[in-house]
Length: 124
Image (cartoon, rainbow, N blue to C red; front, top):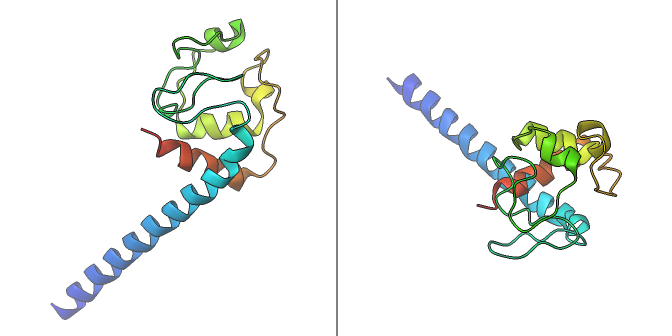
């Protein structure tokens, strides 16, 4: 019985550490977002800037935010912004959606891209 209780305690501790790591990743992702904030807003109800508002982007179908003029390529992409697809896009926007209008070349660090997406996942 003691062994089971110890195991459950270890599992709970591992879960707690994983949650803290995700929170730390999201915090770093918020710092990374400052590069994006030049062109994108990130608050509920805010209008678009040069790029669309990214509040609620995770899970949204690409090219569908109201009151933003998307490229034909983005509207026709058929993408739903899952965390994996969004991370790939912020790393290589022109490879994921050729012909999109985002001038940003991409985030060169895979871990930075993943942390940015973890931050974007908190915007709901």
